[in-house]
Image (cartoon, rainbow, N blue to C red; front, side):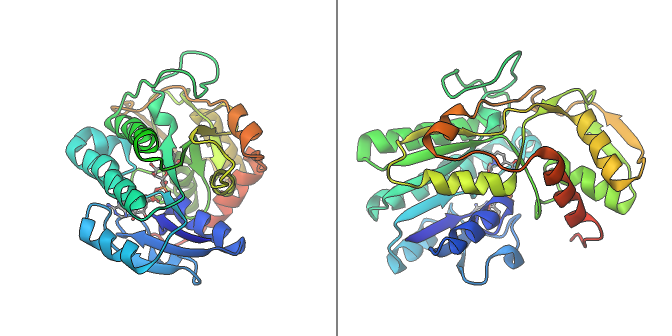
Length: 309
Ligand SMILES: NC(=O)c1ccc[n+]([C@@H]2O[C@H](COP(=O)([O-])OP(=O)(O)OC[C@H]3O[C@@H](n4cnc5c(N)ncnc54)[C@H](O)[C@@H]3O)[C@@H](O)[C@H]2O)c1
């Protein structure tokens, strides 16, 4: 199939592109390289540099190729940035998405796969969050992700554009950005690899559901099947790990006891997050294959000795 991946130079997008190409698809990447890197793009993918807020660039992109499926990974992805710059966050995550949805409808794309986030749930007191519970974002990032989901659902109802929302838990793995606000696994790995202190925001007992990036990419690819009903799918492991436990595991792998600095919790960060993946496991014929320890080991090895820009 002919597939477009917006944000395909980024962390998750580039792994997804690799997975799609390995499965024999023709892939085009559209990315403004804001946080993505050209060297992450598979050499068999076509690359168009551009911004999803630029409708003329999207006109040219869609005029040149007929896409069967679009994966929308491009986004403003930083929670604290969204708290400081809610307008820019909405510009990319809502208005940029609308541009992509419009082009999908106009050019008869068969399905759009939209990346969303556990941030839409907000804080969870108890239990596993499943797709039926009401969303209660507590950051502007979570809010724009929830809005994106609602836009995709309405484009489906109004214009018949099939969709699947992938609500990713905390994705970690190789190529995750570690020089800005990023995934905690890449930040801790980089700190250990460079012998600097690890910073924990809050008391460290906050938890996340960590899923390895290749498992997230495999779930996204499984969701593009036409037989998968339009709707929302949590992509997670159902396993809760605290940030303090994560720190200990990585220090054990590194065989280094790094300094740990505890700072105030960041505005917009959620405390507890763990997602039920039952719907994805049943419907997508998928399950996460990578256990946390080997996944962390692979990721830490990747960051060891790596140059950062
Ligand atoms: N990493 C996670 O743990 C996680 C968790 C939940 C959801 N997500 C979602 O998954 C998607 C991918 O996230 P990621 O972690 O790979 O982030 P990333 O920053 O590595 O990737 C985003 C990509 O989008 C590109 N981009 C940003 N703004 C753009 C714009 N205006 N026009 C064109 N390209 C643009 C960036 O250059 C980058 O290549 C995002 O939608 C994010 O919200 C990620």
